[in-house]
Length: 296
Ligand SMILES: NC(=O)c1ccc[n+]([C@@H]2O[C@H](COP(=O)([O-])OP(=O)(O)OC[C@H]3O[C@@H](n4cnc5c(N)ncnc54)[C@H](OP(=O)(O)O)[C@@H]3O)[C@@H](O)[C@H]2O)c1
View 1 (tube, rainbow, N blue to C red):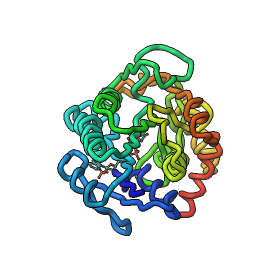
View 2: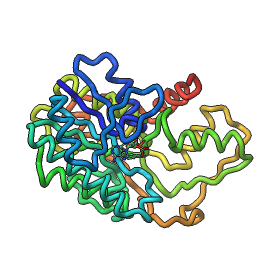
View 3: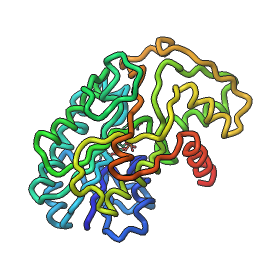
View 4: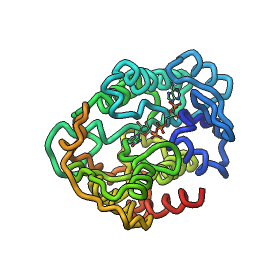
């Protein structure tokens, strides 16, 4: 099969490059800008004609959409751009794949939840109640895919980090090394996800054709539950940054335009059972990522 990855220079896209190195399929990595040392075909997924052209020219069977507008805070001031990238662009990809009978693997987010107070892990069929523009536009993207209806697998994930790009792990590594003390919120609870683990799951589903007859929405994060405070504590502990005191604080101590979900833990039963996946525990994956960052 010919598999096209969008947003290939982002966190998840870069991990897709790594996990697919020995694939029996042919992968084409695309993004809006080129990065030195990474083979990238330019493709702007807001441009439907450009997508149609590349899908026909490259005979694409599967698109893995790793591109998105992912800046949760900035989305509050850039609603149109967030909607364009998170809703219109997936709609474009859906149209293009529907025309050729192909499969779209699309990534969504735990932030489609959070508006209702609950403390049991969110299931796939639970109603979306986003608290901000990012989550709302990602929910619109999911709805567009379902409404237009090409073959699709939508995977909602959460708290992504990796050795690539900007993320919480890299920020905390820097802060806990350079600051004597730090406050991190303990009233937002979820599960971190090492992008390598998610990319491995996507690769397994595609490479082994596990998607056949298994369309729909799935949840994937690492195993376990923690707050951002717990996450920061573990990052500092594993990195050996003992000289920074990390204190738990409430979200209202960091005024922000966006209200983030207090609880957005994803129930992963469906993806584990459907595709026979084993998902690593979050602290084990954190250790792996930290060691990969150290060796860069
Ligand atoms: N990050 C998280 O914590 C998190 C949590 C839950 C779900 N997710 C979802 O997981 C997926 C992957 O996230 P990520 O963190 O890997 O994202 P990321 O690192 O922000 O990467 C996104 C990539 O998409 C590219 N892009 C932007 N506009 C584009 C366009 N018009 N056409 C094609 N590519 C474009 C970006 O390029 P530029 O950088 O040059 O703009 C970037 O390389 C997304 O769907 C995201 O919503 C992420």
